[in-house]
Image (cartoon, rainbow, N blue to C red; front, side):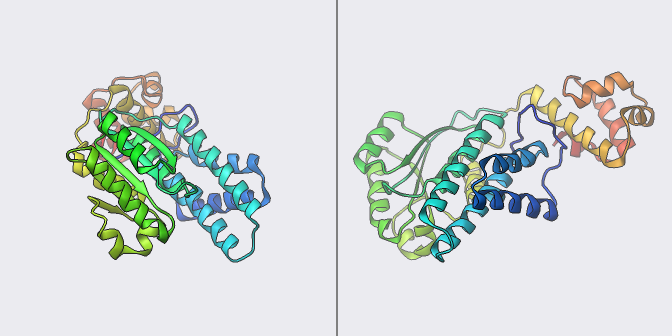
Length: 306
């Protein structure tokens, strides 16, 4: 499954950044957090978005990676609680910005409830999972942290979600996590339950005894497993989304060759105005036109339309 962003910012069409790019932007974001410079942190995130990085890359390899480093520094005594709290709030606000910039290109009709079990639990991990599900076309109720098991069960009974995902940070919270899972199972006939978080990673044997359908160690992997479980790979994508993506890929290939639109038009035998419409996602291409562009750019047709 692949979800691509729908936003007005410039896009390069690249599916993923180079290692050097990723390292540079990650360091820029981390240094901004350490300095308490929210404006600079926002610029780092906007750079990643404008370069068309996937949501998962920005969430996991920029935001989450920086927060892990911040957490390690706090545990080692290198940062105060105030610094850690500020970095957390800045990062949560950047995630909120991302939710405005990225929109799902399809709707699966599936519904999920996602929550952290501790009242003071870290919500960043489950929030990432909730957001990635949203980008995949799920309707997601993200509850934050600390919903009591009885109230969680009531909501599950009321909404009858296809998926319930719960996270625990502290090892001492595994009992509460188990209680929440059992409460959900008592409220629904066949709930699909996913559990994750640092406590689940730290205590795999105890986590396995909780009886979840999926133990998640990574948000992206979990979304992929969930997608396979619910078979959403065949969900229709709007034509305008396909045209926009084809246009982005054509433009990226053209720029990589250092060609102008006119040069690509000459090489492919297509009109430059037509090509401009293609790159802006406004032109409904024929298969023949895609083949001409592929031949000119030495790119398989499947790479444009996959």
